[in-house]
Length: 285
Image (cartoon, rainbow, N blue to C red; front, side):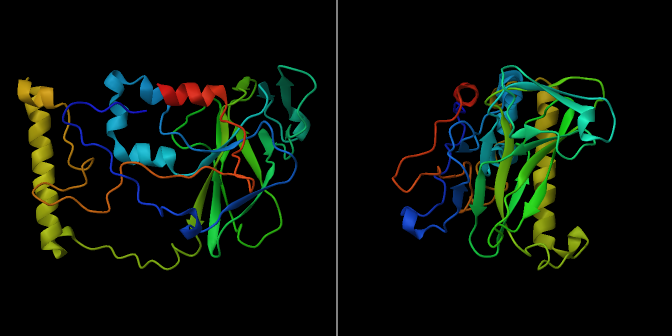
């Protein structure tokens, strides 16, 4: 978890109904008994963020919120994938570390894609789709997660998770326990119902003044750091957005610094198999 530094704002309590009965249900029906592909709340941590100097990447609140926004499915078997650049399914070869091969992981569609058959049929609340994607801010060399939006409030069809290999003749590793899919609820027709309006900033004098004040203060702070100002260096970074306020303004009351993503629990009140050791190690850093 993120360590709090002196002077850093404490995380706001996530806004979520206290009673589970007050929440809209999202149900993950297990198509077959599930033992090694848990559906878990996405962790806040990322290894590459841990490795930044003084973990400064965690100062970017939009980044850390996006990290947490959904649930992840993890890879059940370690394997390497190699694509020769061809279009046929046989042009992608999967070499598993252990036998037998896992028939849930295949090159089904060809063209250098790796397909994971997920063990869930998800049902979302009415008018809520599911954005099926790769794990947010989790870069992977040699491959790109393919994303899709599924109308999971009505369909009886399951969906797969697919990765497109991008480097022919180069082996790409998929390790056991690493996240291979992230699902994020997304309101249907939200984009359709928006009215895009390009406007000059000065059409909103109050917003323009706030922006220019923020920009000037930011430039001045960066210049102070560049000039070796010890107070600015000690301060480290400006925390206005992290604390949910614009310069000179009161804090925004609905500001979030963490998300309250609940855990999937079975009807007998037991949760799914625990997250893999690989993710527990990542989150503990």
